[in-house]
Image 1 (tube, one colour):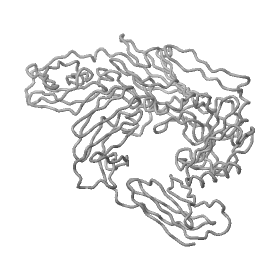
Image 2 (cartoon, helix red, strand yellow):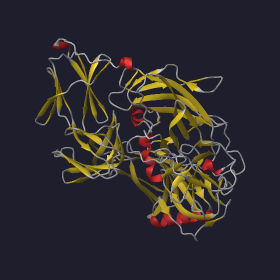
Image 3 (tube, one colour):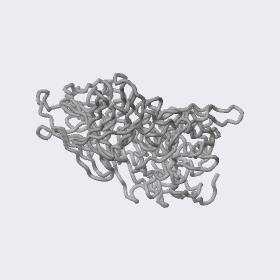
Image 4 (cartoon, one colour):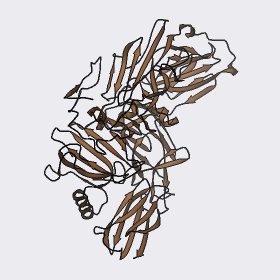
Length: 629
């Protein structure tokens, strides 16, 4: 364990880890069951949808109501209640500028609980977010400030605990020397994925990614891949793995990883300091298409263009590997968990020049001609079969027409490459075959940019994009498809869609995003004949009408508190209001279970009076429940 004051610094190559200073290991007390062994359900930096996990999740053996202690002297600087996210949450600011966060609580300490309840009734809102001053709620180290729970988007009872520095960076709590968490089990490496980093890269003869299963050597504990990989052109790696802590069945995250080429480090990452405002950059840290299409989490062992996360270091090539010789080389990798346990693996690869075939155009008959088009980032990859010298491949853009020569051979097919950054194409022809494209324009990042068509306007803002996007647009009167759903957005874009057809009626009609046969509410508002909405995802959108009111199911009166199950099958619940004898009464909402529970300010005696509950969905449909008690 650490003692004294420790400065965490790493030698940096071309770009590297930012130094993070951790206080004395005795500064913070463990916030729950201090002095006893605790088990974790989640660790710092775990991969989550749209964000990194910013702290540790401490298990509470399925119980709620365990006392939560202030980790150090300070003052309550935030009191927040929400049916989603962190649920019931407290922040404590400490004299050294650090902030500790305690979330998914059941309730606060009595003084804070009473203050929060008064504020909720004053504002007539279950949601609240209050920032007390330094003198309002001072606390001492070890003082009970709350009780553990399962509020917000919590899958099971636990305490979510964070430590942030004065720059609001989330730090790994396990770097602070807590003895309550024990672990000697190393991470588990499941698979390695080799991905092309240029449109002409071939991996074992083809230009697509290759996933390789990792095998564990039972005697050494290290991992290996059975075959030597053959690669032509620049490539990079990704890995799939997880950690299991000693005495615990939960799968937790990988804290750090290192990549070595012939024993020399070429890329590393250590996720122990996360700027809160950059957490959405997880969509560049992971293989986003693999997550969206297969629900498989792969860490990228390279840095994508536009990635601003600060916890990487590299040899200057950002993890991209390319060799010119034909010798066999070793790539070894090291995965490290939050407690410093390591797992190692390696495999061999070589540059297979024998597969770099000369381009020979055969005199094939015209009826055997065929082609296939794929996109690789900004490149259009056109693969042709049966192409003869007398049958050129033509590209069209506006009034321009030009022939495109093949670049290389892949699996017996001629591959033609076109960089869309040079020019957006309208169509291509090969003999009597043709294909049209719906690529419209290149949209650069970090600028405001608007695209216009006859009935559509798309507004991009300075922080909308991670990187340049080829805007693909396909739309008709019923739907619009924007770009590619496998491309992540950094922040929302605005869409203004002119819809002249009014037969469906605009009341209760909104934008929805389509996922196969299902759709999710996006929203928007009408301005004359225009539907205006914002979206954080590319994809296919449609307009749908929701005229069905939300459902209310009365679950009974338990100990003077009314319980209801509320649901809406299409647009979702927007708001709700409970009244007792004409006055507002708080309804505590558990969004994950869709449960509403009444809470009177003074819960003394039986529940009496005229009660009314009104529920409204996102489309404006309302339902109500009325009963006299």
